[in-house]
Image (cartoon, rainbow, N blue to C red):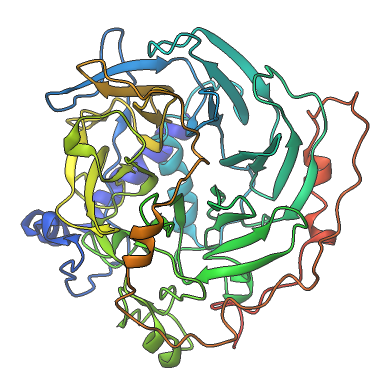
Length: 525
């Protein structure tokens, strides 16, 4: 019998063991009540085995596309990709598509982790023969008509890349184990120069949440990188979480790094709000507290802020599974700005201010919801729009791009989002292996391309925006640097070497990694 058939039976057994009581609880619950600044949080309902419902990935047939409201037109921007995770627009309008698979060989600490790994592979459509991934592809629309005219493989054989940023003829790539800096001039079709390691990042051997997103500060001086937790709820021990569940701030000239904010279980979709210059992220919250806990969320990120994981969620809601308890940290935990409802797996975030979309989407944020697998009814599998006013969410999330899930089958799953060189919304679909373009149906485009990293902050709005909550953050949380002003750099190879064997360089992180940061939950402050 094939391994997939055996495991398929195992998953079926999980459905039977959990029983109808937990399912009925999910069926009665209105997930829309968890969308907004004050989500409804039911009592925890943990079970021996988590609720599961996994959509079979079937892909898109020719002529099929996701659905969008009147006034928007959805077209295929790129096809036949290999797990596209994020998209990034350069100042000249070229679009980078980061295609990536997670590193293999993650150790498992519980029997259920083995089943979870298989489920996640099935949910991504990774059960059959796979194309080569871990590459960055450049797409070029030469006449700005919304159709790709050129396609080039910019980088290959990377170490599970996810986030990128570009400035000063340098392309920064956040792999799962390091931020790499490549010399790159706009218009180039390939990169042949080996990179420098700007700073190592927490990697294996566990590397539970391996995606590392990247954002460039509006002044161009700093990089921000997301580092997810090494577990669901510290089942691998607190030592394994050092420097994780956090957003790092990195000086792009020296590589010096420090934790900017912590207690964020799995942050992704880093983006600066052009209206205020504030950093925002979407976060995947913890599992195994029932089908309706804990809501994933979108939040502004404050310097030195602590957001609860693992000891609490949504401020002072204590997670009794974590020992030892830390009431001092729970007291300081910042509630997130905006709930998105439970287990939607929010992974993508982009602001709409630089788009050419209809006025209904003029001031807000798009969120890519990858979709649930650990509740008995599907949630997510769509792109939503959250309107903003005065730099903050100001209304209910609106479904914008849907149709990824049909019955019990997934055509695709949205991940990273971006605005292309014409002002249209781009959606990376890692299960459908597509990039979708969502444009204004009237053909409106921006006068010129605006790069993802070109955040022009409205200084007046930034000055007028006030912080509602003041948090007394422990000085031991998120304050330490990596121990030096300038990080040691890996040796730079000669320019005639092609960067296809970068794992040997980035893999040195065990020796050259920054000192463990004094950041919750890794160590006592």
